[in-house]
Image 1 (cartoon, rainbow, N blue to C red):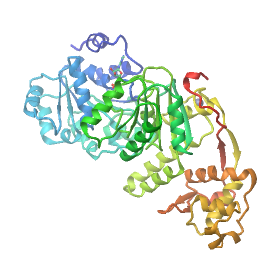
Image 2: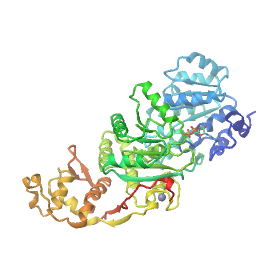
Image 3: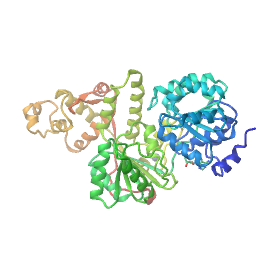
Image 4: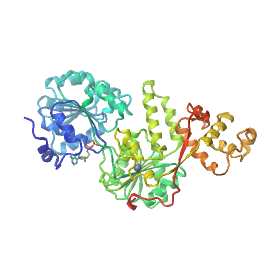
Length: 513
Ligand code: ADP
Ligand code: ZN
């Protein structure tokens, strides 16, 4: 006889109530229905299978892609008295774990996908069918997802070998395309999908083009109190930025990435968790599995990999519900690099990657509400303004920059599509330097056709053109016309520019709106 979920929630986990969609997900699982639960990070996904694992007769098999994450969850489950074990390449106690499974001495068994799909594991399960299959990070099954893992594709035969065992797929990260694919790949009906609200109202979102980044980030650190995380693109960049920020500022700044000496890494992490104003410069590996509710800000030094990634990483701020800030700094070169990487992917994955970059482009380019862009991405229908993002707080002016964009594209074309932004600017503004003269570019029809206030538009226009793929960069940083240049040159498409308001002092969430 299964035990009452609410009672277990209180007795085992010590929580007074379910959160959000947890109750609905648990109810479906207990009723044996196949389910895909889409819940943001921190919403409490683990409970959705851990509770049924205790309530139901038999063991719950959890497939999870990362051994480190798995072991964190394993320890957490054991800490509340759940009988749990794992079968991964780093576990030495396989025999014992298998014997415990056969004896019915386990509530939860964590297993890596490549183990789960093997024949040995299947015959273990035949000895006693599990009570539930939980597939964590289920987006890994989709080539549309940002984190495709071929191993996840091998799970389906295992699931189908036990058609009566309920399946619960869980993910924080799924656009409409990926969701449909997960349902299809894991054999779950569309009406088995439960989506929880994604809004994090206490996080104030702000997006800035990188422009003197060292000063921008120093300004942020000087005005934003509390613990914070800065995500950098590479391991080397984390160390460099941490060193330069701690040399300049008064706050303690440390670095974190997977390549650091393990002792240094865990010391830095422990210090951050204990601190009330430390700043951690880290790769995106930092934050997974750490529980620090009072992070006051998260800054991205460059473009994240996807909206899902951005949502998840920025979501590490303000878990305590108090005001927090998320700052995204981007440059046109981030988009160029991201597009370059598309060509290194197999063809089947290129479409998904293009869509991801376009979605990021929409987030940074919008003159409207950032939160609305994020929430619409997750399938919600948010109000047009939130009152707590940069654009809602100081609505930017938008102007039609089509004419300037056409001048810019013409100059790129007429100079032979191999020069950088500075050269194009020098040509267009008629401020010829030696290089311009040597090439004879001061005699082109585009020489000196931009003057006065229009000059200030050239940089933003070049960024906008690069975001929308009207300009591409060659391997030396030279600009070339991209596939979207033609409709702009022909006057079929317009380019409007969002002009950031002139900033005086940076406002922080604590100043109030
Ligand atoms: P996710 O996997 O969705 O990111 P977790 O399962 O790690 O989230 O849960 C995030 C945090 O929320 C954990 O500290 C967990 O103990 C807590 N939590 C989960 N469910 C509840 C609940 N019903 N009430 C209070 N806290 C909860
Ligand atoms: Zn807004």
